[in-house]
Image 1 (tube, helix red, strand yellow):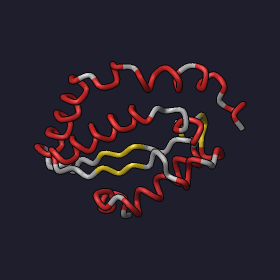
Image 2: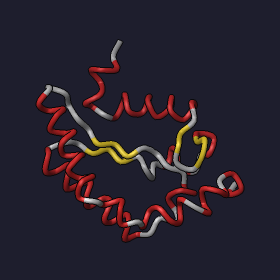
Image 3: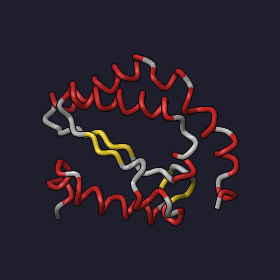
Image 4: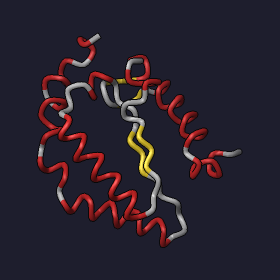
Length: 130
């Protein structure tokens, strides 16, 4: 199964998660600004981390995850916005049929994820009712 994502495993997965640029202060400022804009315009923001395969998650260093989750949880708390984390969701992480590569859902995976979001993310329920 690893042969499915060799280029990604050789490049982005090993290199990108540890780059200092990921946590630039201006990125946090931009996220705070987007949340403020939503609230000012009576939109309900939510923070969601989409599903990743185990091939994406497994090599990511623990210190990166600690910093990432610390940052996202702090922003969610500061802004009183709910955070939904599907990055390690077992319904996806070991099921490669839902992915076009290690961190992007294909059409079937996206449809399934939307079903889950409609059921589990309470803020989205009014938008997804027909």
